[in-house]
Length: 271
Image (tube, rainbow, N blue to C red):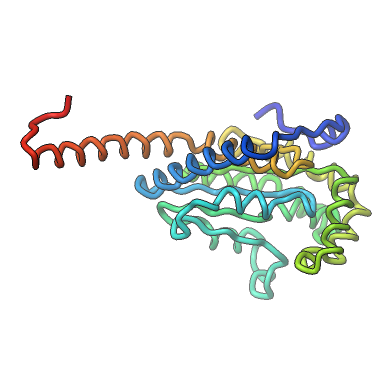
């Protein structure tokens, strides 16, 4: 699929969009969250499955975007998987093994806070995997996502991008907040030294794995509220058919319920 997003181009533009704050933002957010609730209900009732992948720079706001995405959802219908280093058991298996076992069940959504793309991002940048295996990984990921799509799973991939200056600002905020200090690790700080390499790795990953059945969505995330709104817009648009189906089903149910009530008082048919 052509026209893969380009992280380097976005960062060079140095123009990160913002959204209006206050009541306008809250109203827009709530509307999108209710739309997402309808989507989840449609997936549940139609026994479908979806995967939402979140990647991005450290401190790019993945956690906040996921919280807004799931805030109104029924917890029985989704699961968030925060992905860290593999366990000893997982280290002895193919790297995709731990993702296979976390795939969504029927009627549910799986959300990955980092994902199998660690193979071609962090592991590539930090030389944790031999270059030959990195090259193989692009094809393995393409086949993995193609298999998911062929099995009826909707795959949505989101990359949250912030510039280097904004990342430093957020690191400093975490250091000064005792409730957020746990979010900042020495590895996060060390990764800044490999910033350019990470940008190149991300663009290579986009180029190699951007496909119609599993497209990448690059979001300019210097403004957290903008990133949260755009995330909800992207996800609800990609899964719109389930929301529309649910709206139609709900409308039919309302008519039937109203007709039943009218029957009780002797009215035969709704006009």
